[in-house]
Image (cartoon, rainbow, N blue to C red):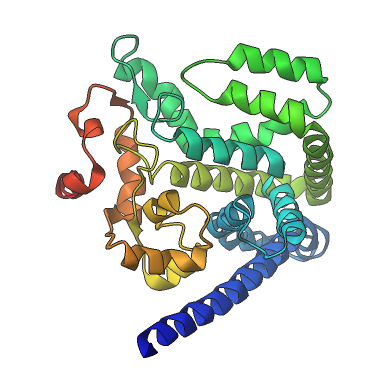
Length: 328
């Protein structure tokens, strides 16, 4: 009985601590956005262009920034749905893409992970080759994913008929892009349009405020694009195909793990997508899980490029080939 009470007390304390951390990081993210989009261009840069270096640490906050949006996507950032979704939408506008697009795409990722529709690095040797697949792969890896998300705002004024036409055009067994556009056009077009207008207005105003220093804002956004795109598939690169729960747990120092809201415990997250981030470490221990790679090693190995669908490694459970992954 004492053990159960102790475990319950610890879980409650972890929950309180986790919610406090989430609130602090939301405040930091919003402060960073205000600094980047308002304070820097209007007050600091006119006084001294050297203040532009403040954009470097802001760019490095891209991963925890995305982690906050990710929590909102799964409904675990705030307890009340209204506050959770509202906060997610505000953060996504600062991120540069409508929340409903990010949410719909991410939930489709969970649904189709490692199937033919969602395996970024894999090419079919019967219809393609490494050389043919490499250009699109590296563009996607080195910023392309974020560019696609941000460029979606160009559809803000597109009529529903065009959305559905594009959905049919992109409908393919090799992507869920058509399903994404069709789903938004049917159920969420109003929300998409209102958020897309705000994204465009915020960044147009920021660009105008930066004036001759607008290149600094462009570099900061480019850095965000690269960091987000590289991090996105690091948890799935080279993992088993046709296994929707397959993902990697990537090792980080505990302070950084907390900083990115335990996003590195990605295998745990895919098995328990409804758990808030501050419960993932407990689930990691309860499941007897383990780390497959260090985070930086996993991110860097993506530079090897596309992988043939015939590769034997893509047919083995990740845990069974952990040692070969680490050696490779």
